[in-house]
Image 1 (cartoon, rainbow, N blue to C red):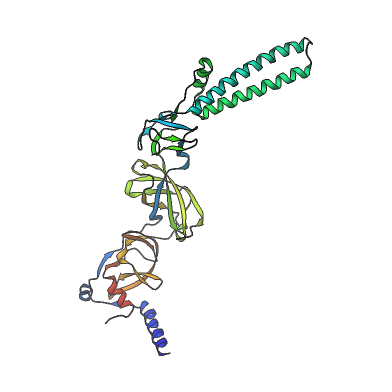
Image 2: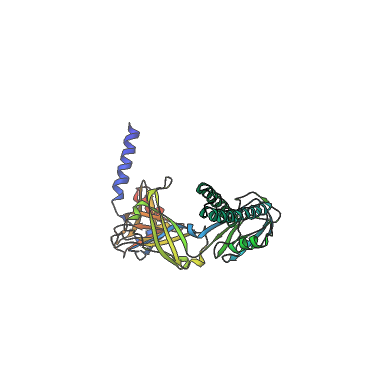
Length: 361
């Protein structure tokens, strides 16, 4: 029972002392290694130092795969190489391509024969020599042959052959097993899994090609910081001079750290960023957002579930509770009811915390 009373009494002293100022002379402050600095300028209307990752917008990333089973004959580009739309990325040898070309020629012959039969039966039907049912049957055969030919052409287009290549094949009937993979856009090769001599099944990804301007940001912020955020707000990456706009504000919280996901499109200065890179972003907010300050982590003290800073006064220091919006490696962004002209302790925080809690002399 006495242990509980002592514990309750000590907690009462701590809670009571939190409301009191810490009286220290200048000599005592120097002896304890306490140093003060002016509070940095407030960041009104801005969320600064938000953790973000650079990503590629989904509509700017393409995967180039093998349309048919084949063997890689030669690769023509490497990772990091810039490419233009239609530029050859690799050449393959595919017996399946030659088989598809043979099927096209057969379908073209059958379609031509069906067309001639249709013209003949149409004339015979008009002359009253054959019945209408026979003419309709010939029409049906022609349509089936035409559909089969169109299917074969589409298969060859999906295999990488152009319209001019297909016309040339129909005119000269020269089969080829050589297949060329080309870039679908102007961009940069991000990934390459193909190597000469490699045998591949159909639909195996070989290259990833992306357009790297503009780039996007995925930004994680605490739920409490979403006040005043609007789609279209200015977003900057100060370390790289990049600028853009906020494009989306998430509607659900992540399960692990209870943050909201924001998306932004960086249109200026994206050439200095790299996909997958982690950066710190700043987001402009509307006028009703709370004032914020970026202060050194060394200025923060945690007592129980509260975070406080120590403000210099004429008699010493007083504690001020703050809310941490974002904690970085060296600095943290806080919000509190501060005027902005205060001086805060940035060194010797442990001594002030101990005095505040009534520990020591």
